[in-house]
Amino acid sequence: MRRRMRAIERESISLVVAMTHPIQYYSPWFAFITAECPSLSLEVVYATEPTPTQQAVGFGREFRWDTPLRAGYQSTVIRDAAPADSVHSDSFFGLNVPELARAVLDREPDVVLVPGWHSITYLRVLRACRRAGIPTIYRGDSSLLGRPTGWKRAAWSARTRWMLGQYSAYLGVGSRAVEYLGALGVERERIFESPHCVDNDFFAAGAAPWQERDVRARERRALGVRDDEFVVLFVGKLEPKKRVRDAVLAVAQAGSDYHLLVVGAGAEDASARTAAHELGARVTWQGFVNQASLARFYAVADCLVLPSDHRETWGLVVNEALAAGLPCAVSDRAGCAPDLVIPGVTGERYPCGDATSLASALARIRSSLRNGTITRRTCSDLIRQYSFAQATEGLQAACRFVTGFHH
Image 1 (cartoon, rainbow, N blue to C red):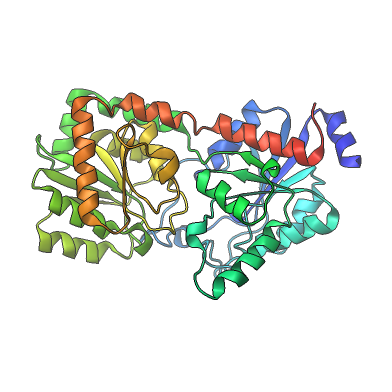
Image 2 (image 1 turned 45 degrees about the vertical axis):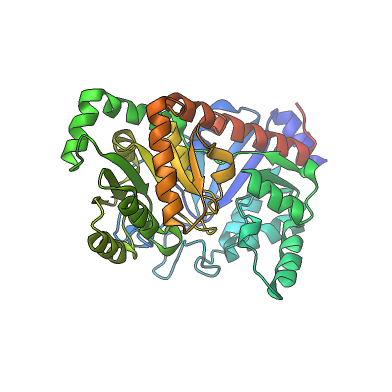
């Protein structure tokens, strides 16, 4: 009650987001909330900021993101990066910053967003909020595709149900995430639609100059693309779950007028290059490209491919591509597939690991582009439903629900 009265006096809800580190996809959303949603008073508290070496995990090279990650919203970093830190989501003990929990409580928030419990640091924050009686909101993209099989499933289900039960409300980022929450006992009235999104305007505006006919033709030639070739773009870390070799195999099967453009680096680079050489596939290896330069490649390609398995719990690269007007061929195991890929409208889906089916999907996209059923407009129209505005609306509704504040 005291928190609700404080919110009424302020005419806004104090929201703290607890994060292990700044993430390039979240930062522009936080800036949007700050600029466009006065009913939420937002502060993001980060455990640390990774060094270029720590940021390099999975990318194969040291770098810093070339877009500002802490601009446009209030944020605090608790401590500098330590040599042993790992911000990789698969490492539960990789980042242990108990001070984050204390920092969150010190801000006396009305509500706290804790993305999940895949880090000991997040678990500490969640427990601290529970003890203090502060409502918490979950925002994750786990799906039932990732649950274990056999005897392990019962134990996993019990543990996951218990962990989800520690939260007060939940943000549904897509249909598979909502299905996951419902199957594990979360009441539908506690789930609020807050779709996974990127800065659509950023990618649309970035691609536009490169989409001019003469400019696009020149850039394609600079990349070694023949005028008659259909360019299939892969963007991402070259790691096992991304299955880049499937894209190589599919392009080799599709024909000599298909050209794969690989933007990314990582552990699978050598094996993918070997496969391309053995198969005689037409591939251009661009290497790592930072955020601000990606739109050029979305503009010069004819479609994006995301061959990932179920460990790709969403695939925000598809959001980026659609925002730039680029259709997508997406594995049916990738989290975003049922939401973002409408066959014959925004792209095609295919069975994960089936390179022959992927080759057929690429041919269907090529045909749909030729006959006009897939256009830049059909792609951009769909992705407008996955925007910062929609994500913020769901977040705002969840905050009002858990605080009882409906000003």
